[in-house]
Length: 356
Ligand SMILES: C[S@@+](CC[C@H](N)C(=O)[O-])C[C@H]1O[C@@H](n2cnc3c(N)ncnc32)[C@H](O)[C@@H]1O
Ligand code: SF4
Image 1 (cartoon, protein in one colour):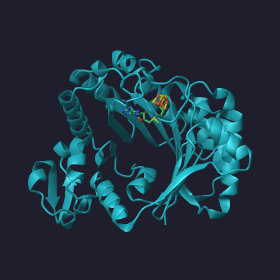
Image 2 (spheres, helix red, strand yellow):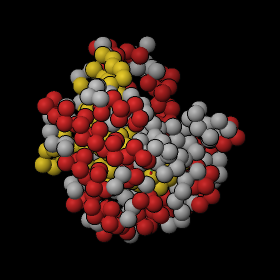
Image 3 (tube, rainbow, N blue to C red):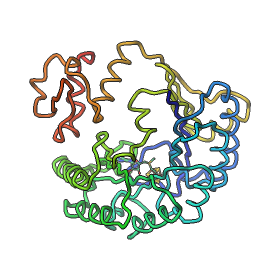
């Protein structure tokens, strides 16, 4: 039985031009009250919460909180003995001291938003960290004793050529200790962001597809296995927390904007940290809404999630594969996305039987 806990940390030093996550760069003064509210929300729900098999501190920027505050919140979450505990950390926060404090406090896995190693690409994305951050992070994470960790990459910036993508991959894979897990996202122009509002900065679809294809080929040659559209891992270094989401598992989300799921019922907290803190301080529930999925929707979502991963779906989930034959591979009665179909997964998902 798996159970996950997601802890949302809605603070960032500065917003990146592409990011639409529920995070703020002007509310750091709320941090102490926010941490206290997380403690309160966790304490009130403790009786309903099984021991966690995975915990994920995401953001925003969890490393914006003092390490002791983050580790204190983790201490409130009962976990099984070998639980996976991941913290998202911005490269500029990845000091050896902080990483040692995380590890001593029970964190088992780190995730860093590197995005690219090329300065002009980082500048176009509106990132603050500079050249060489990938090497500094890799050195510190190893020195702190972590063997499980991830780097996030983004492809598709208008400033990025295919040669830039290749150089980023050379830099990351050429490290003395490369990350055993890599997430690579294609840049999504989110409407309410500076990048989203400027059509001239939106990715070129052909360039993006070529970049994604190069990433997949290079990572698979280097011994990473494709896990899901945006995730590759060396065997044994898969993210258990991601897998729980992909399996429609049960999880509790705490903090502003956090989502929860238990057996087909989903609910979510208010979006801003201000409202979240005020509600919890007043002894009230921070839940903003909920929905209960009917059986058909659950089955469809199950298949759609499985199709995005290397698990795939049984052939019977489709009436016909005729129009999508070039996007999928069929082996032993299981349909999986072909490399050329991974960025076009939605076209395949539309053909799922229960999605008609
Ligand atoms: C919650 S965020 C980041 C964690 C941390 N704050 C950082 O930036 O290092 C997780 C990842 O989502 C990805 N991401 C965020 N917005 C995106 C977008 N619009 N398009 C593609 N990837 C995006 C980035 O790779 C980012 O590192
Ligand atoms: S990508 Fe990370 S640092 Fe940038 S705004 Fe989003 S959460 Fe904050």
